[in-house]
Image (cartoon, rainbow, N blue to C red; front, side, top):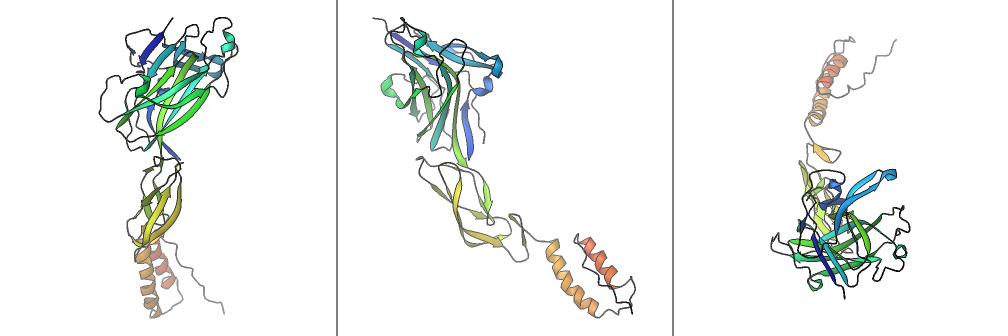
Length: 322
């Protein structure tokens, strides 16, 4: 009885720290059609995962992919995994897989073990080991068995790309993801690992920092905000971060301190405040100023002073002609 066991370390990947607000932890798409990717580090054993180009000129596609097609063998067990991915601030991690799959009908008479699914698994670790993790099935937790819901190749000239997204809660320092093939004719085109945050936001003169979503997709994370500069608290500002990366349920807030006024989400003082104070003084001053009816008196003085303060001058009321 034939027995295929293949284990491949997925090495040609950049680890990225980018910042609904996805924060990408791991991505293969940056290497599509580029040079300088890492050399593959194969393990001992039968190597059935092959790295090759995935090309579709009509769609402008020229990507690197991993391909396996052991449909002619029994007991196929081909593995491919990522390097260690540190979870950063995430409590829940999402994994997006792009792949194509051939229909078993393309292998009549020889597809003794042809499958049309593959398994997506993960393995959490606390230590920062860069060694290849154990790959026995019992060491990994199954995320899902993935099928080509968007379609499979039914002819040699057809290109159907499937995209599937799954998510898992994480508690340890890092995680390995693994793909297990048990007899499919499969091309893995791209892998993206990320987590979702509610973005930085200022509301009611209170600032709320970027906040990762909770471990449970239906759970919420409550955050308290802090007053912006030159503002004071009226009631403790609070927002709730939902699992989809949206803020909701605002309560409380801050207000501008005396001598400052709201400008957008800020509290600004200075020119406007002093201009208002000047208006009060000017009214008292001009009340005692003799009105000569010439342009060199009140209106001209007021216009000059207001222009210095970068504010529009007050309207000048002309004298009625007798």
